Length: 120
Image 1 (spheres, one colour):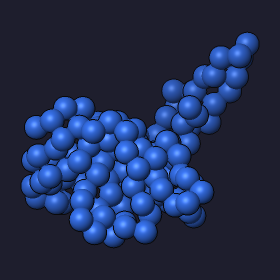
Image 2 (image 1 turned 45 degrees about the vertical axis):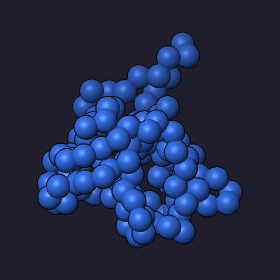
Image 3 (image 1 turned 180 degrees about the vertical axis):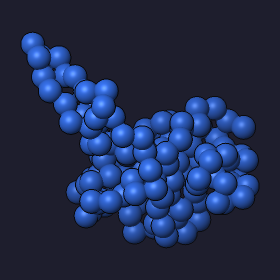
Image 4 (image 1 turned 180 degrees about the horizontal axis):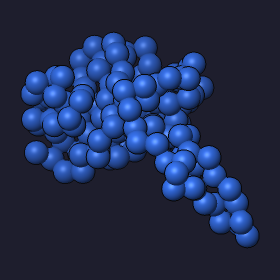
């Protein structure tokens, strides 16, 4: 998968990124997002009307679902600001793949941290 932040070049079928072109994620991770399809390839924290989910968006279906991998249900964020800015989550359950309906989303945040990979 291409990194949306870095420019790449291909040599003999291999893709390379200049070290100087690698940009650390920042709070402007969503700049340039004009629609749901622009979130494909990104990690996100989603609050729906009833649940919280964190994971990697792999696709958006034609009927309005985010297809997510490496996903976890978040039972408790702890301090919400710390959860988003530091990646600390109090209680999670790893679920792997899931679908999240766009119509149920209250808000969505870039997840600039490692995804949880186990239940805690």
